[in-house]
Length: 101
Image 1 (spheres, rainbow, N blue to C red):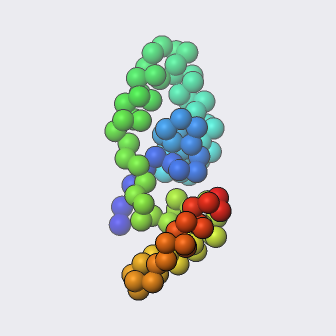
Image 2: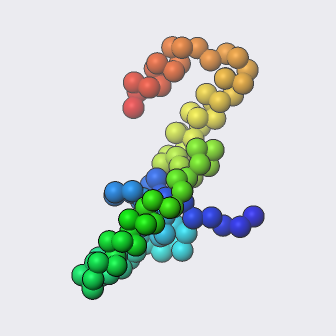
């Protein structure tokens, strides 16, 4: 399976574009942000490249488990998914998990 580039959900300041490049190339997103800033001061190319990539770069799919910041979030998602598939999801579970965060 080929590696794909997505907007980051973890390293996000505006749109997650720089974080997505950082995750894809396995570098610190700060370096990517610095490159965009240098391009902005060198001319308007940095602004246009950032806008274009922010529009064209896809968001990370919801099924991808990299979106969870902690293992507890992932575990809660898996448990709720299993309950839904078994038909045992209670409205109180949804309500409680919504207001716990």
